[in-house]
Amino acid sequence: MEKLEYSIVDFYNAQKSNLKMLRRTLIKANLLTEDVTSLTSEKISAKKLIILIEDVFETSVTATNRQQNTVFARKAAAYILKNHTRLSLSEIAKFIGVKDHTTVIYNVKTASDLMFTEEWYRNKIAEIEDEIKNYNIFTKN
Image 1 (spheres, rainbow, N blue to C red):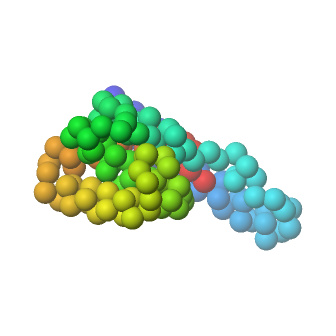
Image 2: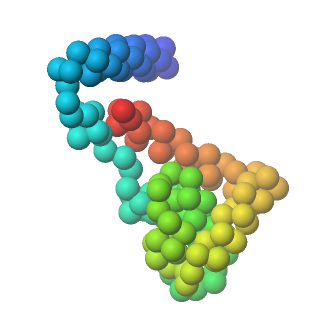
């Protein structure tokens, strides 16, 4: 089954490359004035990322308790949102239920440190990253 999946991904990448070359050619010939690909692409939203993180950690990121599972999920959410969205730190703070941007900075740094020292945490983040890649494989420009 893996061989079939690799074949499909290879085919997709080849077609994507061909379409990029065609797009450049059309732009050079002034036949394409609007970037059509940006109209059809859809990036994963911050809300979907939060739902994914809550599923992996089996808790609510915005819960006001201080249970370890919730704290670890909040740190992961700050890290993932910082790396996969263009949200400001203040906007990320609103999504994860913390007061200000400095807490987001602290959570991102702590998540990075946890990934370096704790294998179970690194595995959870890797699981989230894999889901994001699977989501984005057909939606990238």
